[in-house]
Length: 416
Image 1: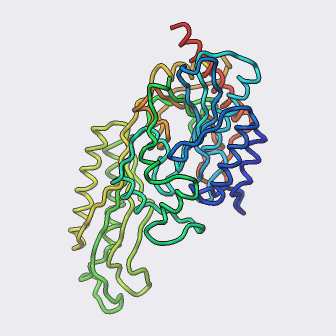
Image 2: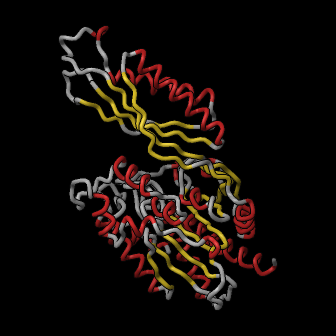
């Protein structure tokens, strides 16, 4: 498994030591072919669905049996780390190999999945949302137009998303019809590096996630008036960047004081015109908010939008709001959480329960089937960064907990 992780890290490797495997890019397509070969080498059954999700299955003797699904994703952010996503896929693949090599007979199929475009190069959590039947034609068109999709090997124009899908053997029709039959599944498990320092600081091996914060994405467009920076008195300007700056600082203070443990982030700001001597006429700001409570999230959204309008009015600007997407907060299945905890206990690994602040495929699947996830430490809490590193012993712990969770789940099914 460690060798697989090292070899995979060479696909899309960057000069800084990270990886760039944006969904449906050439490195991502190479990764898909590599994963298919590893599934075949393990003697497992390979399948790709209409969303480009990749599956490796260890079948049991009963073809009508249900399936325990586990995995994560193999795509990355630009110049990201080599553990975020692949840890979950390769830990699951190793679990299936281990159980197969041990000759253990189970009453369920075991299935490893790599979901497409988890990182949102084109559509956030695309593969798992398609698998759960949560994508529509309208959301597909809106979100693919708003996200970056910056792939050098995909042609320009309005059909860039369709061209990217086609390179992976997917179409918009197949994507919209990729919903699984949830009755076929017992549930879902995911392991991921912790994108933060809590486990390392507490000297713990495993963090069992009990809930995942909801996420809302939107663009805020502050519209002012361009003017020559030398000729327009500062008091008369309609500077869109001033309004945006005022909003960001006030929004930070609001969320910190009124909505803990909620968070907000402004990750992109597109300024027009973008030059030294012209007052910014327009700024398009990406706003992301997260919270564990649906009610608190709605109230945070309401107050932030009121704050954005107040900042726009103060600087004599117009404000336009463009919703992008929403993933509701997800409490995870207590039964699966208990199975993961029991596996960690049996392995004598120090563990705790915790909340997850980042979005994951588990969040999507939790509305469809019993689901839970767990973390292993990331050194210094680093993630989405070439410096991201998880120690080999923690990688091994990830796979051992996966093996024992699957076996414990199968035993529970037999025992009733």
